[in-house]
Image (cartoon, rainbow, N blue to C red; front, side, top):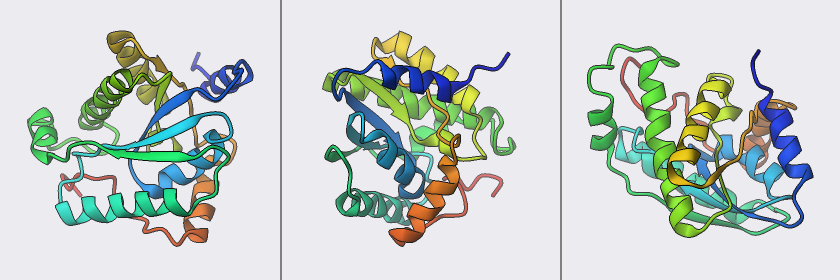
Length: 197
């Protein structure tokens, strides 16, 4: 039976006494919009923009700029901070070598999720964050079970708590579209890598 990650998130939130520190990996401003709005009621969020899978520097910079702009313009319950990881697309290319023919949702994506969540977990641990999470599950093109299982493994490996979630639930994806319109966000039409695009 498939785990209900939204129910798990609701359970965690219901047990919070204060606002813990959350390092939130973000793939882009549109996907993060709903997640930040939702979670900032319960957590002190630092958005971690780490996406070496974006294979063109111009595209990477455009998305990073939009992420910073959204954080500066969006009203949130708790203030949201921003940090950016190192951009080195060669790391992604090396890790996914031999998987160039995989379609979206296949093994190349799993490797990419692991790459980004490893770095997020390590950064969360170093920063003393209480939890780490990712905005990736807001997309209807991303498998929440796969992402959460990778997050759980990273939590065990690095010793920091994973915030289970399926942000597309409760109209999360639809809400991200509405917020993207409200903040006039650039919405890219691909995840990041141009392999098999």
